[in-house]
Length: 234
Image 1: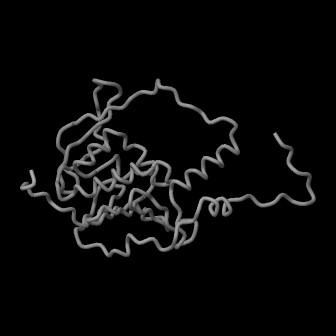
Image 2: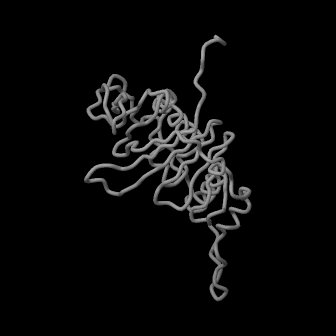
Image 3: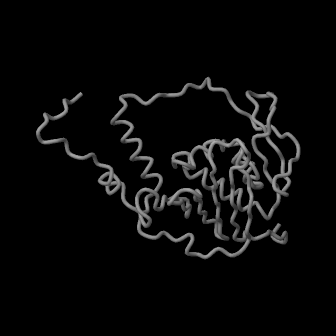
């Protein structure tokens, strides 16, 4: 086994763009991964980005300021606290939700790259009628798939704008991404790929992450007007 050659992961970057004539918004997303497995994702229309390093995920910039860094786990914890302040009970989903199975539907070519098309079927043995994604098995593109799998496993479903896309990556899809790379999901397609070396600074945190207490202080409500009585306790 030790004699079998294994291809080393090289730096890779890919751009995904919404395509089509009737899409509701124009949106793009870039994914960068270096040879050590660090991942950087950013939306083309947003001022911030996300870094995945050493099994942790960070939000950089955005509405917080260009150099402000916070762990997504802390942001999610703060969001849970705020949610609990406004809602007495958190709705619990039952186990009777319909399961979606990933069903292969043959080969499809997206922007000159060929992969396996997959559709979503409801329930075991269901039939898929529309290919909602196409996944390549090209080994050169595999780092893109692993980068997305890493991001999905690092709580991207709680990460705002990117959450809508990554919440669709269930266990079956994530496992498939480990073997290849996403060429298309719905109307978002892989349009550009680069294998040029990525400057290490792209994966460097611009500052130390804020603590959870510092995040709480940033989102603390303003004091009530002094001329009005205090809000009655529940």
